[in-house]
Figure (spheres, one colour):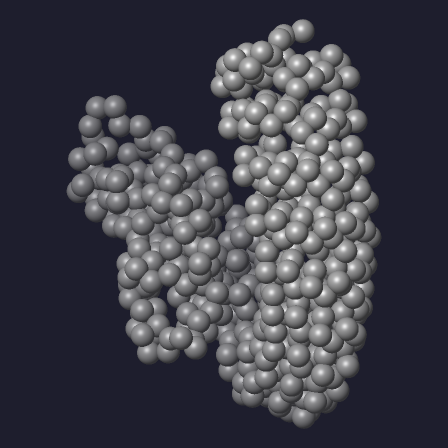
Length: 545
Protein backbone atom coordinates (compact mmCIF):
# COMPACT_ATOMS: atom_id res chain seq x y z
CA UNK A 1 0.00 0.00 0.00
CA UNK A 2 2.72 2.49 0.99
CA UNK A 3 4.68 1.62 -2.15
CA UNK A 4 1.66 2.24 -4.35
CA UNK A 5 1.15 5.63 -2.71
CA UNK A 6 4.81 6.49 -3.35
CA UNK A 7 4.36 5.50 -6.99
CA UNK A 8 1.37 7.85 -7.31
CA UNK A 9 3.19 10.64 -5.53
CA UNK A 10 6.06 10.27 -7.99
CA UNK A 11 3.65 10.73 -10.86
CA UNK A 12 2.03 13.91 -9.56
CA UNK A 13 4.61 15.60 -7.29
CA UNK A 14 7.71 15.52 -9.47
CA UNK A 15 9.92 17.82 -7.47
CA UNK A 16 10.00 15.32 -4.60
CA UNK A 17 10.86 12.23 -6.66
CA UNK A 18 14.25 11.81 -5.00
CA UNK A 19 12.70 11.83 -1.53
CA UNK A 20 10.04 9.31 -2.51
CA UNK A 21 12.70 6.98 -3.89
CA UNK A 22 14.64 7.27 -0.64
CA UNK A 23 11.55 6.20 1.31
CA UNK A 24 10.97 3.29 -1.03
CA UNK A 25 14.60 2.21 -0.62
CA UNK A 26 14.08 1.91 3.13
CA UNK A 27 11.03 -0.30 2.56
CA UNK A 28 12.93 -2.31 -0.02
CA UNK A 29 15.85 -2.89 2.34
CA UNK A 30 13.59 -4.07 5.17
CA UNK A 31 11.13 -6.26 3.25
CA UNK A 32 12.78 -7.46 0.04
CA UNK A 33 12.45 -10.04 -1.52
CA UNK A 34 8.91 -10.88 -0.49
CA UNK A 35 7.59 -7.33 -0.54
CA UNK A 36 7.36 -6.20 -4.11
CA UNK A 37 4.47 -4.78 -6.07
CA UNK A 38 4.34 -3.74 -9.71
CA UNK A 39 5.36 -0.11 -9.44
CA UNK A 40 5.42 0.76 -13.12
CA UNK A 41 8.36 1.18 -15.48
CA UNK A 42 9.03 4.87 -14.77
CA UNK A 43 9.29 4.45 -11.00
CA UNK A 44 11.45 1.37 -11.51
CA UNK A 45 13.66 3.32 -13.94
CA UNK A 46 14.24 6.04 -11.36
CA UNK A 47 14.99 3.42 -8.72
CA UNK A 48 17.53 1.84 -11.04
CA UNK A 49 19.08 5.26 -11.76
CA UNK A 50 19.48 6.01 -8.08
CA UNK A 51 20.42 2.62 -6.65
CA UNK A 52 21.36 0.37 -9.58
CA UNK A 53 18.67 -2.16 -8.64
CA UNK A 54 16.54 -3.69 -11.39
CA UNK A 55 13.31 -5.62 -10.81
CA UNK A 56 12.61 -7.25 -14.19
CA UNK A 57 14.74 -8.73 -16.93
CA UNK A 58 12.87 -6.77 -19.59
CA UNK A 59 13.43 -3.42 -17.90
CA UNK A 60 16.43 -2.43 -20.07
CA UNK A 61 14.21 -2.29 -23.15
CA UNK A 62 11.75 -0.04 -21.34
CA UNK A 63 14.54 2.06 -19.92
CA UNK A 64 15.90 3.00 -23.34
CA UNK A 65 12.80 5.10 -24.02
CA UNK A 66 13.18 6.96 -20.73
CA UNK A 67 16.87 7.53 -21.36
CA UNK A 68 16.08 8.94 -24.81
CA UNK A 69 13.61 11.35 -23.17
CA UNK A 70 16.32 12.29 -20.63
CA UNK A 71 14.05 11.37 -17.74
CA UNK A 72 15.76 12.11 -14.45
CA UNK A 73 14.95 12.48 -10.78
CA UNK A 74 16.29 16.01 -11.29
CA UNK A 75 13.26 17.20 -13.23
CA UNK A 76 14.20 19.12 -16.40
CA UNK A 77 17.66 19.78 -14.95
CA UNK A 78 18.91 21.01 -18.32
CA UNK A 79 16.27 23.76 -18.47
CA UNK A 80 17.01 26.74 -16.18
CA UNK A 81 13.61 28.31 -16.87
CA UNK A 82 11.75 25.22 -15.72
CA UNK A 83 13.96 24.83 -12.65
CA UNK A 84 13.46 28.46 -11.64
CA UNK A 85 9.68 28.15 -11.96
CA UNK A 86 9.50 24.79 -10.20
CA UNK A 87 11.45 26.14 -7.24
CA UNK A 88 9.62 29.50 -7.35
CA UNK A 89 12.99 31.23 -7.62
CA UNK A 90 11.65 34.60 -8.69
CA UNK A 91 14.99 36.43 -8.74
CA UNK A 92 16.51 33.90 -11.14
CA UNK A 93 13.41 33.84 -13.30
CA UNK A 94 13.33 37.65 -13.57
CA UNK A 95 16.92 37.69 -14.82
CA UNK A 96 16.00 35.16 -17.53
CA UNK A 97 12.71 36.85 -18.43
CA UNK A 98 14.30 40.28 -18.88
CA UNK A 99 16.89 39.09 -21.38
CA UNK A 100 16.51 39.97 -25.06
CA UNK A 101 14.73 37.31 -27.05
CA UNK A 102 12.88 35.81 -24.11
CA UNK A 103 9.76 34.02 -25.40
CA UNK A 104 6.94 34.23 -22.90
CA UNK A 105 4.81 31.90 -25.05
CA UNK A 106 7.29 29.04 -25.16
CA UNK A 107 6.08 25.54 -24.32
CA UNK A 108 8.31 23.26 -22.28
CA UNK A 109 7.92 19.51 -22.73
CA UNK A 110 8.53 17.26 -19.77
CA UNK A 111 7.88 13.52 -19.92
CA UNK A 112 7.13 13.55 -16.19
CA UNK A 113 4.09 15.80 -16.40
CA UNK A 114 0.52 14.53 -15.95
CA UNK A 115 0.10 14.86 -19.74
CA UNK A 116 3.50 13.68 -21.06
CA UNK A 117 2.20 13.28 -24.62
CA UNK A 118 0.83 16.80 -24.98
CA UNK A 119 2.44 19.71 -26.81
CA UNK A 120 4.14 20.94 -23.69
CA UNK A 121 3.43 23.26 -20.77
CA UNK A 122 3.30 27.04 -20.76
CA UNK A 123 5.21 28.99 -18.13
CA UNK A 124 2.04 29.66 -16.19
CA UNK A 125 1.13 25.94 -16.37
CA UNK A 126 4.41 25.10 -14.65
CA UNK A 127 3.80 27.70 -11.94
CA UNK A 128 0.38 26.19 -11.25
CA UNK A 129 1.71 22.62 -11.25
CA UNK A 130 4.38 23.40 -8.67
CA UNK A 131 2.53 25.99 -6.59
CA UNK A 132 5.06 28.66 -7.55
CA UNK A 133 2.99 31.61 -6.41
CA UNK A 134 5.75 34.25 -6.69
CA UNK A 135 6.48 33.49 -10.35
CA UNK A 136 2.75 33.04 -11.01
CA UNK A 137 1.94 36.56 -9.79
CA UNK A 138 4.91 37.99 -11.68
CA UNK A 139 3.74 36.45 -14.98
CA UNK A 140 0.15 37.57 -14.39
CA UNK A 141 1.23 41.14 -13.62
CA UNK A 142 3.83 41.47 -16.39
CA UNK A 143 1.91 39.78 -19.23
CA UNK A 144 -1.75 39.93 -18.12
CA UNK A 145 -1.83 36.18 -18.68
CA UNK A 146 -5.25 34.66 -19.45
CA UNK A 147 -5.97 31.75 -17.13
CA UNK A 148 -7.27 28.44 -18.53
CA UNK A 149 -8.94 25.28 -17.28
CA UNK A 150 -5.56 23.56 -17.46
CA UNK A 151 -4.15 26.16 -15.06
CA UNK A 152 -6.93 25.40 -12.60
CA UNK A 153 -6.41 21.65 -12.96
CA UNK A 154 -2.68 21.93 -12.38
CA UNK A 155 -3.15 24.33 -9.48
CA UNK A 156 -4.89 21.56 -7.53
CA UNK A 157 -1.80 19.41 -7.90
CA UNK A 158 0.41 22.34 -6.89
CA UNK A 159 -1.71 22.91 -3.81
CA UNK A 160 -1.18 26.67 -3.46
CA UNK A 161 -4.47 28.18 -2.28
CA UNK A 162 -3.67 31.65 -3.69
CA UNK A 163 -3.20 30.24 -7.19
CA UNK A 164 -6.29 28.02 -6.88
CA UNK A 165 -8.48 30.92 -5.78
CA UNK A 166 -7.25 33.23 -8.53
CA UNK A 167 -7.88 30.57 -11.19
CA UNK A 168 -11.41 30.05 -9.83
CA UNK A 169 -12.19 33.71 -10.43
CA UNK A 170 -11.79 33.20 -14.18
CA UNK A 171 -12.45 29.51 -14.88
CA UNK A 172 -15.31 27.15 -14.03
CA UNK A 173 -14.09 23.78 -12.73
CA UNK A 174 -14.61 20.58 -14.74
CA UNK A 175 -14.53 16.88 -13.86
CA UNK A 176 -10.74 16.70 -14.07
CA UNK A 177 -10.49 19.48 -11.48
CA UNK A 178 -12.46 17.22 -9.15
CA UNK A 179 -10.15 14.32 -10.00
CA UNK A 180 -7.08 16.43 -9.22
CA UNK A 181 -8.65 17.63 -5.97
CA UNK A 182 -9.03 13.98 -4.96
CA UNK A 183 -5.49 13.16 -6.09
CA UNK A 184 -4.10 16.02 -4.00
CA UNK A 185 -6.29 15.06 -1.00
CA UNK A 186 -7.71 18.58 -0.87
CA UNK A 187 -10.89 17.56 0.97
CA UNK A 188 -12.21 21.08 1.55
CA UNK A 189 -12.06 21.74 -2.16
CA UNK A 190 -13.72 18.39 -2.94
CA UNK A 191 -16.70 19.44 -0.82
CA UNK A 192 -16.63 22.93 -2.35
CA UNK A 193 -16.83 21.49 -5.88
CA UNK A 194 -19.71 19.22 -4.90
CA UNK A 195 -21.73 21.98 -3.27
CA UNK A 196 -21.05 24.82 -5.69
CA UNK A 197 -20.57 23.13 -9.09
CA UNK A 198 -22.47 19.85 -8.68
CA UNK A 199 -19.34 17.89 -9.58
CA UNK A 200 -19.41 14.25 -8.51
CA UNK A 201 -16.86 12.20 -6.63
CA UNK A 202 -16.01 8.99 -8.44
CA UNK A 203 -15.34 6.06 -6.16
CA UNK A 204 -12.68 4.67 -8.48
CA UNK A 205 -10.69 7.89 -8.00
CA UNK A 206 -10.93 7.55 -4.22
CA UNK A 207 -9.67 3.98 -4.52
CA UNK A 208 -6.93 4.61 -7.06
CA UNK A 209 -5.52 7.60 -5.21
CA UNK A 210 -6.07 6.19 -1.70
CA UNK A 211 -8.22 9.11 -0.57
CA UNK A 212 -10.16 7.69 2.37
CA UNK A 213 -11.61 11.07 3.38
CA UNK A 214 -13.11 11.62 -0.08
CA UNK A 215 -14.46 8.06 0.06
CA UNK A 216 -16.20 8.78 3.36
CA UNK A 217 -17.54 12.08 2.01
CA UNK A 218 -19.01 10.21 -0.96
CA UNK A 219 -20.59 7.61 1.31
CA UNK A 220 -22.08 10.30 3.55
CA UNK A 221 -23.59 12.17 0.60
CA UNK A 222 -24.71 9.23 -1.55
CA UNK A 223 -25.68 6.57 1.01
CA UNK A 224 -24.60 4.07 -1.68
CA UNK A 225 -23.34 1.51 0.81
CA UNK A 226 -22.98 -1.42 -1.61
CA UNK A 227 -20.80 0.50 -4.07
CA UNK A 228 -18.68 1.85 -1.23
CA UNK A 229 -18.25 -1.66 0.11
CA UNK A 230 -16.72 -2.96 -3.14
CA UNK A 231 -14.15 -0.14 -3.05
CA UNK A 232 -13.41 -0.27 0.67
CA UNK A 233 -10.55 -2.76 0.33
CA UNK A 234 -8.46 -0.21 -1.58
CA UNK A 235 -7.45 1.53 1.64
CA UNK A 236 -5.81 -1.51 3.23
CA UNK A 237 -8.01 -1.38 6.34
CA UNK A 238 -9.65 -4.76 6.90
CA UNK A 239 -11.77 -3.42 9.75
CA UNK A 240 -13.36 -0.97 7.30
CA UNK A 241 -14.46 -3.82 5.03
CA UNK A 242 -15.68 -5.85 7.98
CA UNK A 243 -17.72 -2.94 9.32
CA UNK A 244 -19.75 -2.88 6.10
CA UNK A 245 -20.59 -6.56 6.50
CA UNK A 246 -21.55 -6.06 10.13
CA UNK A 247 -23.75 -3.20 8.94
CA UNK A 248 -25.58 -5.66 6.69
CA UNK A 249 -24.21 -4.89 3.24
CA UNK A 250 -24.56 -7.54 0.51
CA UNK A 251 -21.22 -9.37 0.69
CA UNK A 252 -21.59 -10.28 -3.00
CA UNK A 253 -22.28 -6.79 -4.31
CA UNK A 254 -20.17 -5.74 -7.30
CA UNK A 255 -18.54 -2.54 -8.48
CA UNK A 256 -20.19 -0.67 -11.33
CA UNK A 257 -17.21 -0.72 -13.70
CA UNK A 258 -15.75 -4.23 -14.00
CA UNK A 259 -18.23 -6.13 -11.88
CA UNK A 260 -15.67 -7.16 -9.27
CA UNK A 261 -16.90 -8.42 -5.92
CA UNK A 262 -15.01 -7.71 -2.73
CA UNK A 263 -13.72 -11.30 -2.87
CA UNK A 264 -12.19 -10.61 -6.29
CA UNK A 265 -10.57 -7.51 -4.85
CA UNK A 266 -9.24 -9.33 -1.78
CA UNK A 267 -7.60 -11.95 -4.02
CA UNK A 268 -6.05 -9.32 -6.31
CA UNK A 269 -4.78 -7.34 -3.30
CA UNK A 270 -3.31 -10.51 -1.78
CA UNK A 271 -5.32 -10.12 1.42
CA UNK A 272 -5.43 -13.64 2.93
CA UNK A 273 -7.09 -12.58 6.19
CA UNK A 274 -9.95 -10.87 4.41
CA UNK A 275 -10.45 -13.74 1.93
CA UNK A 276 -11.03 -16.14 4.82
CA UNK A 277 -13.28 -13.65 6.60
CA UNK A 278 -15.41 -13.06 3.49
CA UNK A 279 -15.80 -16.78 2.78
CA UNK A 280 -16.87 -17.37 6.38
CA UNK A 281 -19.47 -14.60 6.03
CA UNK A 282 -21.24 -15.86 2.93
CA UNK A 283 -19.14 -14.59 0.03
CA UNK A 284 -19.92 -16.54 -3.15
CA UNK A 285 -16.68 -18.27 -4.12
CA UNK A 286 -17.97 -18.61 -7.70
CA UNK A 287 -19.19 -15.04 -8.19
CA UNK A 288 -18.31 -13.71 -11.66
CA UNK A 289 -17.17 -10.28 -12.80
CA UNK A 290 -18.22 -8.68 -16.09
CA UNK A 291 -15.66 -10.83 -17.94
CA UNK A 292 -17.20 -13.97 -16.48
CA UNK A 293 -14.21 -14.59 -14.20
CA UNK A 294 -14.50 -15.96 -10.67
CA UNK A 295 -11.98 -15.12 -7.92
CA UNK A 296 -10.14 -18.34 -8.83
CA UNK A 297 -9.30 -16.79 -12.22
CA UNK A 298 -7.75 -13.83 -10.40
CA UNK A 299 -5.69 -16.19 -8.24
CA UNK A 300 -4.45 -18.06 -11.32
CA UNK A 301 -3.68 -14.82 -13.14
CA UNK A 302 -1.60 -13.50 -10.23
CA UNK A 303 0.04 -16.83 -9.41
CA UNK A 304 -0.91 -16.88 -5.70
CA UNK A 305 -0.62 -20.57 -4.86
CA UNK A 306 -2.16 -20.82 -1.38
CA UNK A 307 -5.16 -18.71 -2.41
CA UNK A 308 -6.02 -21.38 -4.99
CA UNK A 309 -6.11 -23.97 -2.21
CA UNK A 310 -8.30 -21.75 -0.03
CA UNK A 311 -10.81 -21.02 -2.79
CA UNK A 312 -11.01 -24.60 -4.05
CA UNK A 313 -11.45 -25.98 -0.53
CA UNK A 314 -14.38 -23.57 -0.22
CA UNK A 315 -16.06 -24.84 -3.38
CA UNK A 316 -14.50 -22.90 -6.26
CA UNK A 317 -15.37 -24.51 -9.61
CA UNK A 318 -12.08 -25.42 -11.28
CA UNK A 319 -13.83 -25.77 -14.66
CA UNK A 320 -15.72 -22.48 -14.56
CA UNK A 321 -15.60 -20.66 -17.91
CA UNK A 322 -15.30 -16.94 -18.55
CA UNK A 323 -16.86 -15.03 -21.43
CA UNK A 324 -14.21 -16.42 -23.81
CA UNK A 325 -14.76 -19.98 -22.51
CA UNK A 326 -11.39 -19.95 -20.79
CA UNK A 327 -11.03 -21.91 -17.57
CA UNK A 328 -8.77 -21.12 -14.61
CA UNK A 329 -6.32 -23.65 -16.08
CA UNK A 330 -5.97 -21.52 -19.22
CA UNK A 331 -4.88 -18.65 -16.95
CA UNK A 332 -2.59 -20.76 -14.77
CA UNK A 333 -0.92 -22.24 -17.87
CA UNK A 334 0.53 -18.77 -18.53
CA UNK A 335 1.97 -18.31 -15.07
CA UNK A 336 2.18 -21.06 -12.48
CA UNK A 337 3.24 -24.71 -12.55
CA UNK A 338 2.13 -25.14 -8.93
CA UNK A 339 -1.38 -23.79 -9.52
CA UNK A 340 -1.74 -25.99 -12.62
CA UNK A 341 -0.96 -29.00 -10.43
CA UNK A 342 -3.53 -27.91 -7.83
CA UNK A 343 -6.23 -27.37 -10.46
CA UNK A 344 -5.58 -30.68 -12.21
CA UNK A 345 -5.53 -32.61 -8.94
CA UNK A 346 -8.95 -31.10 -8.24
CA UNK A 347 -10.46 -32.16 -11.57
CA UNK A 348 -9.58 -29.42 -14.05
CA UNK A 349 -10.11 -30.48 -17.68
CA UNK A 350 -6.70 -30.29 -19.37
CA UNK A 351 -8.28 -30.32 -22.85
CA UNK A 352 -10.90 -27.63 -22.30
CA UNK A 353 -11.11 -25.25 -25.28
CA UNK A 354 -11.76 -21.52 -25.32
CA UNK A 355 -13.63 -19.54 -27.98
CA UNK A 356 -10.61 -19.88 -30.27
CA UNK A 357 -10.43 -23.64 -29.60
CA UNK A 358 -7.18 -23.21 -27.71
CA UNK A 359 -6.41 -25.60 -24.87
CA UNK A 360 -4.25 -24.77 -21.85
CA UNK A 361 -1.39 -26.50 -23.70
CA UNK A 362 -1.60 -23.87 -26.46
CA UNK A 363 -0.99 -21.24 -23.76
CA UNK A 364 1.78 -23.16 -22.03
CA UNK A 365 3.55 -23.77 -25.35
CA UNK A 366 4.16 -20.02 -25.54
CA UNK A 367 5.71 -19.81 -22.10
CA UNK A 368 6.77 -22.79 -20.03
CA UNK A 369 8.45 -26.15 -20.54
CA UNK A 370 7.54 -27.28 -17.01
CA UNK A 371 3.84 -26.47 -17.42
CA UNK A 372 3.77 -28.29 -20.77
CA UNK A 373 5.20 -31.38 -19.07
CA UNK A 374 2.54 -31.27 -16.35
CA UNK A 375 -0.31 -30.86 -18.83
CA UNK A 376 0.94 -33.62 -21.12
CA UNK A 377 1.54 -36.03 -18.25
CA UNK A 378 -2.10 -35.46 -17.28
CA UNK A 379 -3.53 -36.21 -20.70
CA UNK A 380 -3.28 -32.99 -22.70
CA UNK A 381 -3.68 -33.60 -26.46
CA UNK A 382 -0.44 -32.47 -28.09
CA UNK A 383 -2.11 -32.33 -31.53
CA UNK A 384 -5.17 -30.33 -30.53
CA UNK A 385 -5.91 -27.59 -33.09
CA UNK A 386 -7.25 -24.10 -32.52
CA UNK A 387 -9.62 -22.37 -34.93
CA UNK A 388 -6.65 -21.52 -37.16
CA UNK A 389 -5.74 -25.23 -37.11
CA UNK A 390 -2.58 -24.44 -35.18
CA UNK A 391 -1.26 -27.04 -32.75
CA UNK A 392 0.80 -26.24 -29.65
CA UNK A 393 3.87 -27.08 -31.75
CA UNK A 394 3.08 -24.17 -34.09
CA UNK A 395 3.33 -21.85 -31.06
CA UNK A 396 6.43 -23.50 -29.62
CA UNK A 397 8.17 -23.27 -33.01
CA UNK A 398 8.07 -19.48 -32.66
CA UNK A 399 9.69 -19.44 -29.23
CA UNK A 400 11.27 -22.47 -27.60
CA UNK A 401 13.55 -25.32 -28.63
CA UNK A 402 12.95 -27.10 -25.30
CA UNK A 403 9.16 -26.97 -25.60
CA UNK A 404 9.37 -28.27 -29.17
CA UNK A 405 11.41 -31.23 -27.94
CA UNK A 406 8.85 -32.05 -25.24
CA UNK A 407 5.91 -31.85 -27.64
CA UNK A 408 7.61 -33.94 -30.32
CA UNK A 409 8.75 -36.58 -27.84
CA UNK A 410 5.10 -36.90 -26.81
CA UNK A 411 3.79 -37.40 -30.33
CA UNK A 412 3.30 -33.93 -31.79
CA UNK A 413 2.91 -34.03 -35.58
CA UNK A 414 5.81 -32.04 -37.03
CA UNK A 415 4.04 -31.69 -40.39
CA UNK A 416 0.67 -30.51 -39.10
CA UNK A 417 -0.68 -27.64 -41.21
CA UNK A 418 -2.65 -24.60 -40.13
CA UNK A 419 -5.35 -22.75 -42.09
CA UNK A 420 -2.67 -21.31 -44.35
CA UNK A 421 -1.07 -24.74 -44.82
CA UNK A 422 1.95 -23.66 -42.80
CA UNK A 423 3.81 -26.27 -40.78
CA UNK A 424 5.77 -25.55 -37.60
CA UNK A 425 8.88 -25.44 -39.81
CA UNK A 426 7.47 -22.44 -41.69
CA UNK A 427 7.35 -20.59 -38.34
CA UNK A 428 10.76 -21.78 -37.15
CA UNK A 429 12.34 -20.74 -40.47
CA UNK A 430 11.53 -17.13 -39.59
CA UNK A 431 13.27 -17.25 -36.24
CA UNK A 432 15.42 -20.13 -35.06
CA UNK A 433 18.17 -22.30 -36.48
CA UNK A 434 18.03 -24.65 -33.47
CA UNK A 435 14.27 -25.22 -33.72
CA UNK A 436 14.60 -25.90 -37.45
CA UNK A 437 17.21 -28.56 -36.70
CA UNK A 438 14.96 -30.27 -34.16
CA UNK A 439 11.94 -30.26 -36.48
CA UNK A 440 13.93 -31.56 -39.47
CA UNK A 441 15.63 -34.28 -37.42
CA UNK A 442 12.15 -35.44 -36.43
CA UNK A 443 10.82 -35.65 -39.97
CA UNK A 444 9.66 -32.14 -40.90
CA UNK A 445 9.17 -31.77 -44.66
CA UNK A 446 11.60 -29.07 -45.82
CA UNK A 447 9.68 -28.60 -49.09
CA UNK A 448 6.20 -28.31 -47.62
CA UNK A 449 4.26 -25.47 -49.25
CA UNK A 450 1.78 -23.08 -47.69
CA UNK A 451 -1.29 -21.74 -49.48
CA UNK A 452 0.94 -19.24 -51.30
CA UNK A 453 3.14 -22.18 -52.35
CA UNK A 454 6.00 -20.85 -50.23
CA UNK A 455 8.40 -23.30 -48.62
CA UNK A 456 10.26 -22.70 -45.35
CA UNK A 457 13.23 -21.62 -47.50
CA UNK A 458 11.22 -18.67 -48.84
CA UNK A 459 10.90 -17.43 -45.24
CA UNK A 460 14.49 -18.16 -44.24
CA UNK A 461 15.80 -16.33 -47.34
CA UNK A 462 14.43 -13.06 -45.95
CA UNK A 463 16.38 -13.29 -42.73
CA UNK A 464 19.00 -15.95 -42.12
CA UNK A 465 21.88 -17.53 -44.04
CA UNK A 466 22.32 -20.10 -41.24
CA UNK A 467 18.72 -21.32 -41.50
CA UNK A 468 19.04 -21.46 -45.30
CA UNK A 469 22.11 -23.68 -44.84
CA UNK A 470 20.19 -26.12 -42.65
CA UNK A 471 17.23 -26.30 -45.01
CA UNK A 472 19.30 -26.75 -48.19
CA UNK A 473 21.60 -29.31 -46.58
CA UNK A 474 18.47 -31.30 -45.79
CA UNK A 475 17.09 -31.21 -49.32
CA UNK A 476 15.22 -27.93 -49.64
CA UNK A 477 14.56 -26.99 -53.28
CA UNK A 478 16.57 -23.80 -53.82
CA UNK A 479 14.53 -22.91 -56.92
CA UNK A 480 11.04 -23.58 -55.55
CA UNK A 481 8.53 -21.00 -56.79
CA UNK A 482 5.62 -19.52 -54.91
CA UNK A 483 2.23 -18.71 -56.44
CA UNK A 484 3.59 -15.58 -58.16
CA UNK A 485 6.71 -17.30 -59.39
CA UNK A 486 9.17 -15.94 -56.82
CA UNK A 487 12.07 -18.13 -55.73
CA UNK A 488 13.93 -17.79 -52.42
CA UNK A 489 16.51 -15.74 -54.36
CA UNK A 490 13.82 -13.21 -55.28
CA UNK A 491 13.00 -12.90 -51.55
CA UNK A 492 16.63 -12.47 -50.50
CA UNK A 493 17.21 -9.86 -53.24
CA UNK A 494 14.13 -7.97 -52.12
CA UNK A 495 15.48 -7.83 -48.54
CA UNK A 496 19.02 -6.91 -49.75
CA UNK A 497 20.46 -9.78 -47.75
CA UNK A 498 23.78 -10.09 -49.56
CA UNK A 499 24.96 -13.09 -47.55
CA UNK A 500 21.83 -15.09 -48.34
CA UNK A 501 21.91 -13.99 -51.99
CA UNK A 502 25.44 -15.29 -52.47
CA UNK A 503 24.78 -18.45 -50.48
CA UNK A 504 21.70 -19.35 -52.54
CA UNK A 505 23.55 -18.74 -55.82
CA UNK A 506 26.45 -20.92 -54.68
CA UNK A 507 23.95 -23.69 -53.95
CA UNK A 508 22.30 -23.69 -57.34
CA UNK A 509 19.83 -20.82 -57.31
CA UNK A 510 18.93 -19.66 -60.82
CA UNK A 511 20.04 -16.00 -60.95
CA UNK A 512 17.76 -15.37 -63.93
CA UNK A 513 14.63 -17.10 -62.67
CA UNK A 514 11.53 -15.10 -63.60
CA UNK A 515 8.38 -14.55 -61.62
CA UNK A 516 4.94 -14.42 -63.27
CA UNK A 517 5.61 -10.80 -64.27
CA UNK A 518 8.87 -11.77 -65.97
CA UNK A 519 11.02 -10.15 -63.27
CA UNK A 520 14.34 -11.66 -62.18
CA UNK A 521 15.96 -11.25 -58.77
CA UNK A 522 18.07 -8.46 -60.31
CA UNK A 523 14.92 -6.60 -61.39
CA UNK A 524 13.62 -6.83 -57.83
CA UNK A 525 16.93 -5.59 -56.36
CA UNK A 526 16.97 -2.62 -58.77
CA UNK A 527 13.35 -1.70 -57.94
CA UNK A 528 14.19 -1.70 -54.23
CA UNK A 529 17.50 0.14 -54.82
CA UNK A 530 19.31 -2.70 -53.07
CA UNK A 531 22.87 -2.03 -54.25
CA UNK A 532 24.63 -4.87 -52.43
CA UNK A 533 22.28 -7.50 -53.83
CA UNK A 534 22.64 -5.98 -57.33
CA UNK A 535 26.45 -6.21 -57.25
CA UNK A 536 26.43 -9.88 -56.23
CA UNK A 537 23.74 -10.84 -58.75
CA UNK A 538 25.56 -9.15 -61.65
CA UNK A 539 28.85 -10.75 -60.60
CA UNK A 540 27.22 -14.18 -60.92
CA UNK A 541 25.73 -13.46 -64.33
CA UNK A 542 22.30 -12.06 -63.56
CA UNK A 543 20.61 -10.17 -66.35
CA UNK A 544 18.04 -7.41 -66.26
CA UNK A 545 14.90 -8.10 -68.32
